[in-house]
Length: 326
Ligand SMILES: Nc1nc2c(ncn2[C@@H]2O[C@H](COP(=O)(O)OP(=O)(O)OP(=O)(O)O)[C@@H](O)[C@H]2O)c(=O)[nH]1
Ligand SMILES: [Mg+2]
Image (cartoon, rainbow, N blue to C red; front, side, top):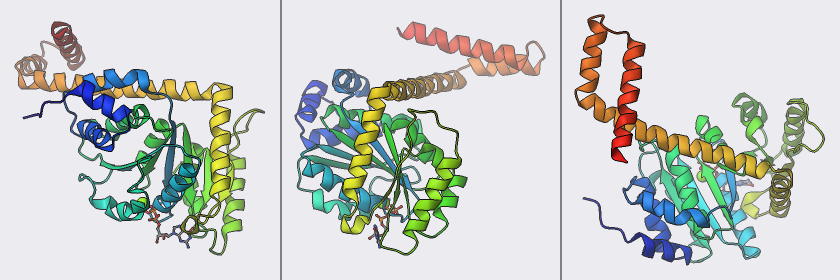
C-alpha cells in the first residue's frame, strides 16, 4: 500500500534544499509512485537551471574519483551540486556503489551537495524513464550542476549522453582505451575528453591518440564544437581547473549556438515518448489480460482477419481506453 504523500509540502522542502525531501522525491521516481504525476507537475516550473554533465568511461578509469574531485572544485565556486550515480546493471540501490559512497564521504556533511545512487535494472521503463525524472528533481531542488555518473560501458552510456547537456568521456593511459572508445562509439558522444591517471606512463600518447581519432571523425564546420582533451590526476585533484574551463566553454557554446535548446528539446521528446510508451504498454497489458487480445488472436487463427488489421484494432482499443480515462 502506497504511503500518502503530501506533494506540495515535499516539493517546497526539496526546493528549500532539504536533503530528506530530495531523497524522498527520488525514491518516488524509483518506485514509479502514483504521486509522481503531481510531483512532476509541481516541479516543472522550477526546472532548466542546472547544467547536466554526464560522466562516462570504462570500469576503473576513475569516474568516481573524478566526480568527487569535480564536486570539490565546484563547491569551491560555491555552486550547488547534485550527483546521480546510475548503475543500469544492478537491480539494488546502493550495493554496487557502496565503494563510491565511501569515497563520497568527503561531501557527506556538505548541505550544498546531494549524492544519490540509483539502480535501474528491472525498473519499469528502465534507464530512459527514471533517470530524467531524477534529474528533474535535482534540477528543481536548485542544483547548479548535476553530474550523472554511469557504471559500465555500452548502450547505457549512449543513453545517458542523450540526457546530458555536456558529456565527459574518461579514458586512461594504456589499455588501448582510445581504440576501445572508438569501437564502443564513445568518441561520437564525447563533448569533453579526459585522460585521467595522467601520472602514469603514456598519458601524452593517449592524448595524441584521442586527438587524432577525433580529427578523423566527421568534417567539422567552422563554429562547430571541437571536443577538447584534458589531462587529469583525479586522485590528486590535478587538472580540475582545466576540466572546469572545458565544461564552462562547452556550456557557453551550447547557449550561444542554440544547441542547448536543441539538445533539451530532443531530451524532452525522448522523455515524453518513454512515458507514453510505458503508459501504452500498461494499457496493452490490461487488454492482454482482458478478452480483447484473445478474440483478436482467434480471428487471426481462423483466418477472419490478418495480424496487421488485428494489431490496428488493438491500438485503437488502447486509444479508446485512454479517451475513457479522460
Ligand atoms: N594513479 C592514479 N589512480 C587513480 C586516479 N584516479 C583514480 N585512480 C584510482 O583508480 C581506481 C579506480 O577509481 P574509481 O574512481 O573507483 O574508478 P571508476 O571509474 O569510478 O570505477 P567503477 O565505478 O568501478 O567503474 C581507484 O583505486 C582510484 O584511486 C589517477 O588519476 N591516478
Ligand atoms: Mg565508480
